Image 1 (cartoon, rainbow, N blue to C red):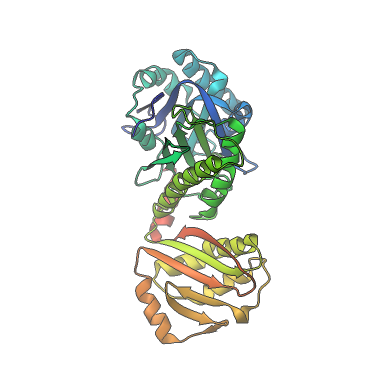
Image 2 (image 1 turned 90 degrees about the horizontal axis):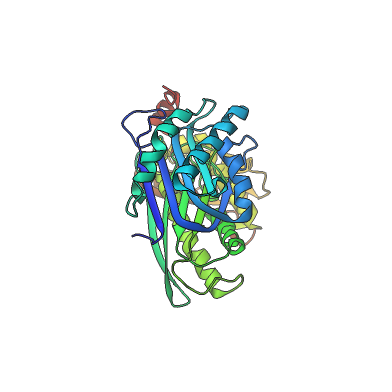
Length: 393
């Protein structure tokens, strides 16, 4: 898929590693509507701080992104380098620096080498082409093992509207909004306020429902650019068109979010924690998230141990009131716990077979209400420890 008016480029700039794409560019041939959801961490990287300011007018023309160095916790020097990289690109593209959104991912606390940008901005711009989307997806990878892209189309008011999305992330994943990068472009005709209205709930239901390790990053973000090329009637708030657009955007973000979980550092299984019977959606989510973030639960899944006691124990510290002796817990269609008590050893033996699968659903019924929510996670393996122990080396 290609979206007319957008082009892409990626080069090997040697920012941290040699012989790999690590500097990417998404470019629109004219300023377009833009919106973002940025990290909620109090410790924000230089590009995040700059983007918060630049997104206020809901307009952008380019996204410049590097991997290998986060440019976080680098003080005023890091801010200056970030501004300089944008100015270098603006001069080469002959556009306004304030229309360039900046993004970085990689090691925290190390200075970003501006020379890598000085030497490579020109070839980066020269390499712009409409079919280089997946090269940018490769350039933003760090500990990812696969690139993550999604292409989607939907009919809105009788017009085909197209979406192209990419993401990176495998560790330090508990967005809020944080811990990964995602860039989405669309040819929808939509205002900046309406784009933000669609993005905020879509992020809440997708990227903010995943967790690999419970850590929130300093850098990461979702950025969306819409160029209006589909020539649909401009999408208005509260209309069917707005609902259709949000649904399509949420589809893309969910596809990318689940790909992040599936590619979790060292992960061998993707796990859905579904909590039902809660009094409120927020309570269902809190219980699901607490279980999903439990290291003991995640290691049990890696060991293919149907240790439901760890799940119930994690639920008990979620800060949500419930009666333990009303809780049911199932792995897939196998009930292990009914009214807070073990069903029996034979059920655990049956569940062990389910734990050998690559995708597992844990169903928890609190029997306190009618609300349900899901959180998506993965297991903790020996490789997760190795990857993160060796990350800087």
